[in-house]
Length: 130
Image (cartoon, rainbow, N blue to C red):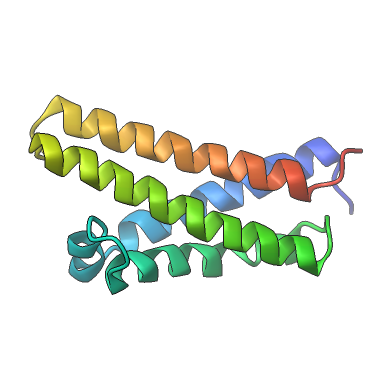
């Protein structure tokens, strides 16, 4: 049974949001958490790598563009995800916000929103228009 383009897009975004929750929360380690604020540190790079590894199946599960586009989108996600996290950590640490602070949760929420928009962009470019 084939899906309509709209249903495929909804299924694909659901997959990406679920994988994001797993990678950002379930697979978060002390190394990743501590090092996301240090530009180029292994923890932050590992975190971005985990994300693209979990994104890759979307290109098989939901046919769209070719292999070159998939590689470009994964590279783009790696760079964008890494920098969104790094910048959020810079802001949180600059202001000294902690878990108990409303501003911390606003920063985390905006960080998650930007990641979600990244997935919308990936699917916009990947999935067929009709």
